[in-house]
Image (cartoon, rainbow, N blue to C red; front, side, top):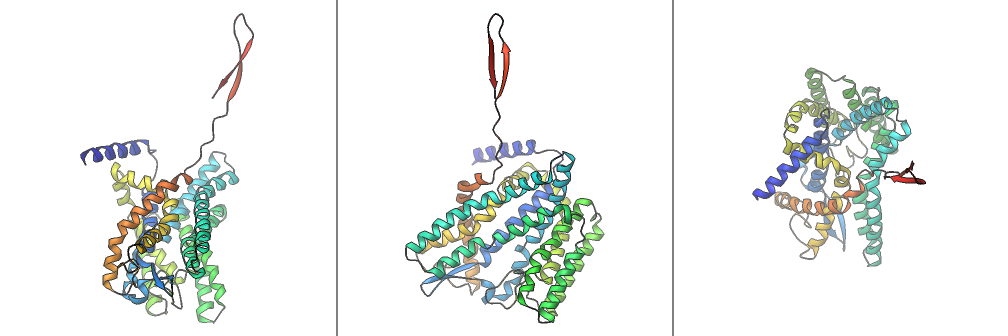
Length: 396
């Protein structure tokens, strides 16, 4: 054990020393917290149970609605878009200063996002085909594939907003928030068509993205503004839930008439504003924490494989669930109906097992996310050797 601690301390010290002095470590810490929030949230509120010879997705929020506050803690996508907006604006400005074209910049950014996706799609195409050939029900296969692929919508939206950075960099968050409010008013108040709600997929996540751009411009300086953002967002969320008929859960609940997340509603946007304000309030404290090599090394390593962790966490959970079926079809917290406090306690005990399975996925697929460095091009020069012919010498 002391030897492992010594090795970790040496690794952490090396990562700390290799980090550029000007890097804003608090930004990386917020991104890491956002990714971990999404992963833990899915593991806690998503359950696979046996039904009619197959599997179906359910949630403890169906039977235990008082667990809705769990979604307030772990629905952290707004913070991810906040950080994404800031990083995109800062990165694009830096690229322009260095003479890098928009095409080259956006290609590099989107390549980092979508390279790991290919591995997920290939593996699950093979798995789904194998399950169907092996006699698994179409509904079961559809349930599993949907569970794996459903998080990809977030990457598509994030990619679109990143590509639009030059256009939306100076857009006030009030404009997309107004669009969300108008869509909800039309949809819920005037009996508009349900499809109009999908406008909010772009508009809703554009709110924290443009808030991140404002952060990059220095427009959110001052704790007073941030406390106002937290207070206004929290008050608006409470009013919409208590008086406006919006769900208390900030994630989708199977069978519910309205979801705050798919597509985003005004309640989700207001909640996201409060969450972003709180994240910005704690960034100084995070910066001080990240000055410790051990804490920073954990955040830095997670950020290197953030997309791998995000893309494979559902697969890890399903793998554990499938292996558990070899033992029993009624393992508490894994296959049983999530309808009691006992289920919640049992699911908490499964989290380290999910994490171990995710670690195996990380080890197998993380290289898809790493930036590929171009191979050095050999350079041939001519050199005359005294008293002899000219020789070509190749340098790597």
